[in-house]
Length: 124
Image (cartoon, rainbow, N blue to C red; front, side):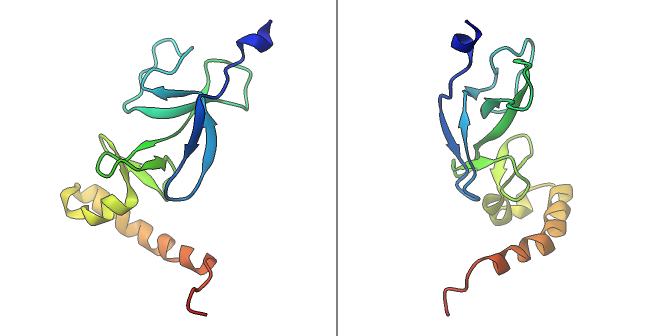
């Protein structure tokens, strides 16, 4: 009978920046079976596959509050500052963010510059 109660995926979440895909079981701010947990944003959530505890969950991602694209919570794709922002929108509007966020983004730039070497050069 427990197998019938197993939560089935509602859909598949896809990050529009890195391409991460994962089945999600809930979208919203109050994941099921979590007593008093309320998330600060509407999020794609899945049951934690690494524990049998039904109260545990993983937050996959959300929508950028500026451009609405689906982004994962990975630090290479988005940040949360009162709302979720994808990094392209953060970079385009960097001066609108507090100095602390601007400094954090400056620290990330050397790491971000190393990613293009993984991509094939389209000019060759």
